Image (cartoon, rainbow, N blue to C red):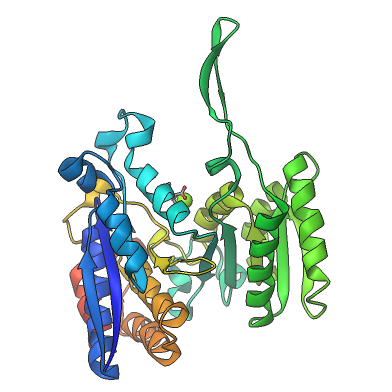
Length: 357
Ligand code: IPM
Ligand code: MG
């Protein structure tokens, strides 16, 4: 029997609630496909601070590095808003991304036919939209040096550095072109090359890599325009590639095409070693344990795990189909509730999807 070791990091807030549903669905997959998933639970974020004093304990990183894939819920709690910056739960997320070299973050925003009603946008605008946002995840202003807050001429100044090497741009560009080749062969690179030097280099390298992919129709867009176009005409996009901070912002925006951040899955890939799978949403600490939030993003992240880390394409499709079927059966969590549907909680949504595997 095939076995896979999954490092499970439920984290804070609703993280454990949604991860429980994802594991439930993975268990259903294991049964059907006669594989074994070994789950190793570790601490990350606020729960790790409580137990060990740091948001990303060494042991967590060790288990993650030895695993075949990492499955993460969410980190963060209002409680830590005033803690020293290097101890914040979010640091753990950035830390594990960097430590595992997870430079390529794939965030699909798909408007499933069943969910057209839950989008705040007009039906004909979003119906059939299917976008893959590829966000560079280990560079840019998130990690650039120098950074800090210091005293200068009698007042404080704060600064970060949006910095990319050619090599960093080149490797994310390659991922983007490869993904585009497997889809509709359209790639839009988003930058701010009219203002930022780092973006001018970004564009130069993208154009260079493009020469190896003559079949891909490449376009460039400034990030402000891209933010507008995503709402104005989302169906013009197939694959979008962009740097870390722009990708953070545009992917939250894209979640409003299907209508909820609770639907957006993600995969973070490295050059070698385990990949990480997590929903794009945060920890929503106010909803912890209330059985109200949508587990679909986390469940679809498990589907991406099967596809990208375990080569189990058919099982990955099964999860997507099970999600679709569950929606067709009329089950909705409150974030995607619409008239005539059956309102269910986090657990019941997980049960229904697992039953449909
Ligand atoms: C995301 C989140 C994180 C990010 C936060 C929690 C650090 O917003 O994954 O998009 O900014 O990358
Ligand atoms: Mg974000």
